[in-house]
Image 1 (cartoon, one colour):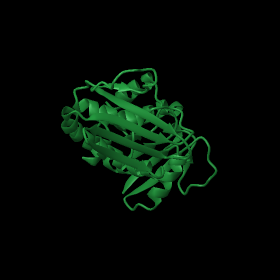
Image 2 (cartoon, rainbow, N blue to C red):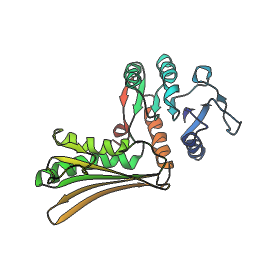
Image 3 (tube, rainbow, N blue to C red):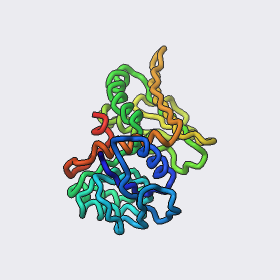
Image 4 (cartoon, rainbow, N blue to C red):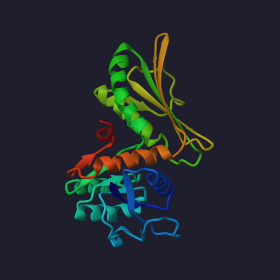
Length: 251
């Protein structure tokens, strides 16, 4: 049985993961950490990670950037593996993540969905075959109307996976409204749609002469990210110090 600390347990993702783990016989929450607690959880909740004295095999973090520094110090000091899901980290914090990974196992990924991370692998193979054959590459992502960044981090990760396979020779284009020219061959177009309550929808389009190949991933709820984080925690427990990502989890 893998025991985890749920860092940010009373947020939306923290509660989603709490429910998922309650139905999973291979993992349990030893304690939660959240500045605001109303006693809703069946496990003890601490106001900060520094106060937490629970024994655990890993931490799952869905908190906020302001809490990450203390979390990294705690995990590094205890040699406690951490699945780091909080986004919006500064360059200084990303450097601290690297430093912490010298002392404990840290798993950080642009998207925790197992499906997206499988897609990242498939796109490399597709790009290696289709791009040299003259296929144009476009990525269209759709999210809810409350999302403030565009394009999404996942869309950029998909583009990066393709571009790595193509020796990073392709340019990213986010807006063609001010351009009056034919589409250059070595570019990846990224388009963002914002509306309603769309959780996350990504299409990667390879458009060739007389045929189009499209890879699509749709997230119908945030549970897909929670499920990925749980699989990551199971994987990370007992691993040696170092940086990991979801590609390690799916093999």
